[in-house]
Image 1: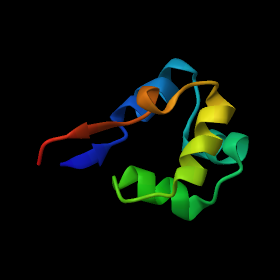
Image 2: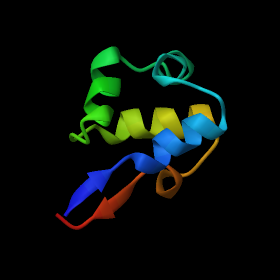
Image 3: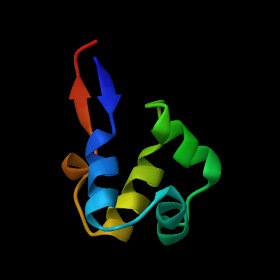
Image 4: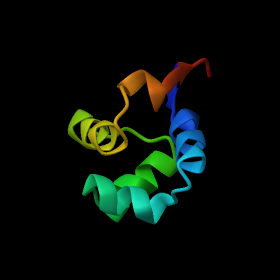
Length: 67
């Protein structure tokens, strides 16, 4: 299994935001945004910052998928 952040990208489109807007709103680094784009591991602290900035829960920005 692996993590997919496709829900996050769809949410950003719905909110008319891009990755830079997410970086600024959540106060996260460019490296973290790059990791999200590559579906790499990211800390829960970063995920929580994103959830707080977008006013959503974790299950609204990520999901597990089979390999």
